[in-house]
Image (cartoon, rainbow, N blue to C red; front, side):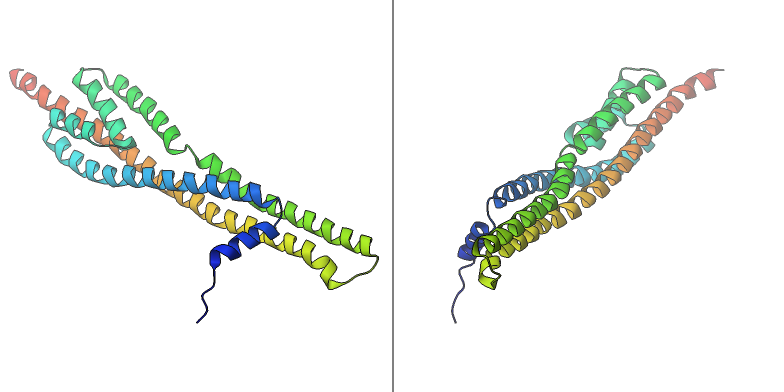
Length: 223
């Protein structure tokens, strides 16, 4: 059975696609790097957040502030950052409004970090098909130019230009489709992390309530 050299075929397609293949390949490499980095970051953040939130429920119920701070310091991700910001304010005996402000500020910073790279994916998803269509126009121009120079219409004259048009269009769509799917997937994961961040903020507020209730018992008994 004859083995097909796929690498040679890809290089041939790249060469036949013309100079528009260079920006298309550049777009694909940029998108691939962002997808790998963003996928790893979100997986780590989501995985650690689920575990931390489960531990925080138990710690909140028992009012173990020091242990909660220790757990938040050991965990990576936006939920841990929000918990740590709020718990440190609680340790320093700040008021409830100070705690809420710290949580809100940290949440805004972490959300910006989570969304980093998404504009790049959105840009690639929009630009890649347009680059492919631009290659299509260039290919058709080359085809009509060949007809004009020859003074007659023959399949061999227009085949090269049409080939350029089809290759660049297919390449642009092949890049845009997976990038668009990745973008929507990441947006969904970030929305889930935002929900986890809100749950983490609520966990801090529950812990504050638990601590305040515990501290208030002696005073109530004294009265």
